[in-house]
Length: 434
Ligand SMILES: *Cc1c(COP(=O)(O)O)cnc(C)c1O
Image (cartoon, rainbow, N blue to C red; front, top):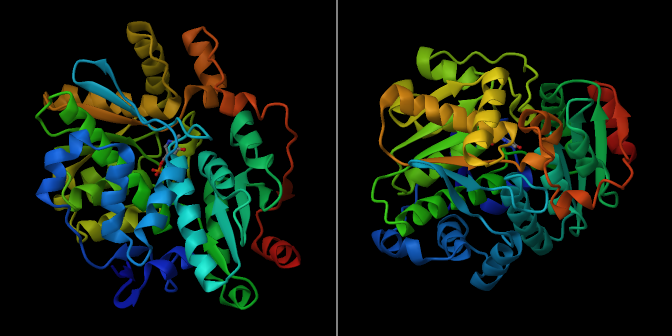
C-alpha cells in the first residue's frame, strides 16, 4: 500500500514515511493511493469476531511490512478497553468510544499510532518530535498514548482557558517526554502554529517534527475499526438493515475514518455529520461552498473548529463532487441550547448521561430521523465520557457525575505548562532551545 498527497497524486510514499512526516511535503494530507476491499467472507462472520480480530483484518489491508505478530501485539496493547454498543431508544444506539485511559475516542487513534510509529522508528534508528494542536481531547490522548514512548518527544499546543479543568490536567501532568504549551489564542491559532512548524524546512534541518493530529493517517486508520465493530454488534442483535452512523465532528477525522470504512466495503446506509455552531461542513453540504471561518466557542469545545483539516480528504474521497458527497452524508448544526436540552431530555427519559459532544450527535440523529422518517438503525458515536465535562453536565441533570478512576487519579496532580504567546518565532525559538 502506497500513499500520495491530496495535492499531488504522482509522488508515492510508504506507510513509514507517512507516519513520520505526518503532513506531505507539499502541505497536502496523505491518502491511500489504492482502495483495498474487505472480502465478502469477512462480513459473513463479522458478528462473531472480537474487536481485536476485526482491527487486525482491517489493518492488514493498509499495513504491510510489519510482521503479523508485532501488528497483533500493537492491536492488543492499544485496544485494552471495552467498546460497548448501547440501546437508548427505538432504533437508536450509542457506540461508547470513551472507555480508554483518557475517556475520549481519541485514545483509539493515539494509542495505535504511537505504537506503530515507534515500531518504524526503531527500525530506522531515528528520534522524532511530535507536535500536536489540541482543543482538549487530542492532547490528552496523545500525551497518554506517547508517554514514555522511546525516541519520541511530544509538544502539545492548547488554547489557554478554552479547555475544561480536567482536560487541562490531563494535558499538563505527564512530564518526562511530554511538554504542554499553553497558547494565548484559540484552537485555530494552535493548529496554525503546529502547521507552520511542520512546514518549516529550515527547522527540519535541525529537528524532525511530525504531527499526531488527525491529519496523520496513523490516527485515522484505527478509527475505522470501530465502524466495522458497530456494524458487527447490530448484526449480532439480528438487525438486517444497514446502519446510519452519526458522528459528532470538529476536524472531521472521525467521519473520514467512517467514509474510509465504507469505501473498503462496510455496509453503511448513510453518515450524519453532527457539528455544533461551527457549521462549515453542514453548510458545504447544502450550498456547495466551503467557507472556513474563525472558530466559535461552544459547550462542545473539542468540536470548535473553523477550518476542518480533514475536509481535504473528504473532497478526495468524493473526487470534489459535492453531489456525490451529499448522497452519503447529511449535515446538521446543533446550537448550545439544543445540546443542553438533549442532555436533559435523554437523562430524564432514559437515565443515560450524555457528554455535550455526544449530545450534539444525538440531537442531529433525532433531527435526521424527524426529517427523513428513516427506519434504519442509528448508531451515534459517543466521543467522550460525561465526567470530562461535568461542569456543563451536572447542572443540567441536577446530579453528580461519577468520576471514573482514570480521572480521579489526576485531580491531585499539579499542572505543568509553559505559557506561550500566539507567535510563531517565539515558539520556534523555544523548540530549538529545548
Ligand atoms: C476531537 C473530538 C471530536 C471531533 O472529532 P474530529 O475527528 O476532530 O471530527 C468530537 N468529540 C470529542 C469529545 C472530541 O474530543
